[in-house]
Amino acid sequence: MNGSTTNHPELAAQQAPASAEPDVRNADNPLVARLKARIASTGHVSVAEFMKAALGDQDGGYYTTRDPFGAAGDFTTAPEISQVFGELIGLWCVDTWRAMGSPRAFALIELGPGRGTLMSDALRALRQVPECRAAANIHLVETSPVLRELQQNTLRGENITWHSSFPDHGRTPVIFLANEFLDALPVEQYVKHGGNWCERVVAHDTAHDRFCFAIDRSKRLPLGAITRQLAQAEEGEIFEYAPTVRDFVSDMAHQVFLYGGAGLIVDYGYTRHAIGQTLQAVRRHRPIDPLESPGECDLTAHVDFQLVGETAQNAGTKIWGPVDQSVFLQRIGIIERTNILLKRANVSQAHDLRTAMTRLIAPAEMGALFKVMAMTDQRLSSLAGFEADS
Image (spheres, helix red, strand yellow):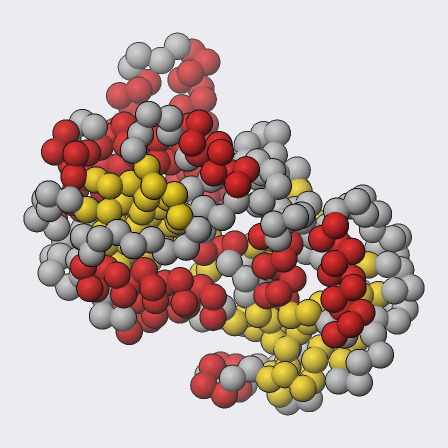
């Protein structure tokens, strides 16, 4: 790495970002100054701490200060691509509610609800079965004041309770929805260095005034996390460790196990434990260096669905999937629902409907990269979208 990062004796420098120009585009963001001051004091921050601050800082974090969605933002999620996505998720909730025995009351909880678009479309589908809609108590888990205000506007007139963490839902059965939520949770990174898995951290290159990666040789990956695959890894390889993802999934599964119900997770990721970096940043729909603009870009990491499944099973729930998003959406009726809408669409609307469906299910688009997994209590013997995998 060019330039000085830190004088911390346990840190080994890693390759700096390609550009040698100072990053001044977000110089007014108070988060950047606080990160620099913290690193100057401690020598570095972990990748997880950097992600947590960059995304959730109350005075400069990415999600707490802006609406990141849509063409005018930085990325577009499935509910913003097509109303059909949220409607199908709503119908999936109805079908799952029936499989649960049609309880008189249940909690419908969405984690990270964006603009509220998915829940709005899902509730439109629930209203087709009035008994299900009457039974559903809606809870949204959202920490961003900006996004919470958008959700309130989108869902005006609905009886909804907002939370900053897992809600108390009165011990009723529960259905969780988590669409593109786990990918934004912080991950730790470790590097195979000198035969050991040492933590990869974020330091500050004072010579070029930019954040950069380094290795903290004093911090090691917990021994219990070192699998045979990791033990045999080559020098310099990177492994992403996700205890925050594990904790969220464990909490979700624990509630499903205790009170009955289901949880549906839709996200991009991989089906088996893997070595390699997936940490990425997006700004204005284009990839950028993950350390380039903290607080000004989206930071995510691919979800390890094997970790999700094992964690949920350890909590006592039954696991379904993962399956590709394309498979799941086709099984629950995306083609049939789109064809119904096409019958009353004009030429422009028909084009938009077909384009949206292609984005959601084509393997080269979101169809293969995005995976869908569900957890249920052990009593459910079937689950829509996972029929062939049960």
